[in-house]
Image (cartoon, rainbow over all chains, first blue to last red; front, top):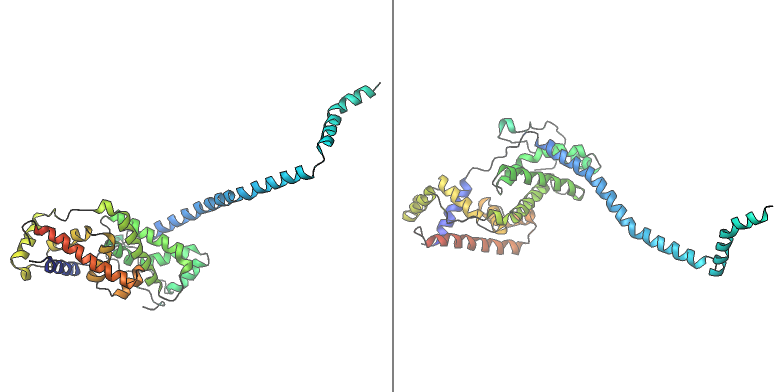
Length: 99
Length: 213
């Protein structure tokens, strides 16, 4: 005997079986809505976190650009040294000038 | 069914079933409200369509906890994808597509844990097969043993085979309907149906090595 007749018989049995129940647990819709509300709350913090992470690269790039431009357009090193001397010795100058 | 109508909640569970909805407004109105940001309008859509989604999920899941997980996932996915709803077909049809695809994803995800041996038969199942061997025409399709046998056989199939046999042969849907529900191309459905039948025959053929066929 071939398996096909048995397969056909079993498929017929499945067709004749009672359709599955459409019973719904009490207040199931409330449960789904609670899940949706919780997910929306989580989504807010998740999207804020994602936004901040995305901001990291532009912020870092901006820092590099600002730093580089400040170095490029700042006064020359000898001027910087003179300014440093003036700041460090400022107190000494004022103290020697006083009587 | 037009979009201006919605099916009554046909729950059979008495006390466990939520009361049927009395709101006469069509589904499309609630869908538009949800899309415009009124999330609470989605509750009415769940209430209207959950009996049918539960019945669909029960065709593929064994335990009630699995069924509830599937149905919950169906509605969460539906909510997420609702902005893509084009109002061309009734909401119910669109929701059933989401339901069938979610059930298929569930079968694939639980493929390993669901593997069962079709050769482990109960006493009643063995008796039914013996009866079939002696007189195939007299073997009763309504017998519980026949139903449990076919359930075991379906559980032993790969998810895509199980889905195509369920839709094509048990629910007797057309290829076009299966294409709409699953998103599979028509040639793919035909190939999967052919292979699914072959896989079923192979599983039944293993019984031949025993005493039944």
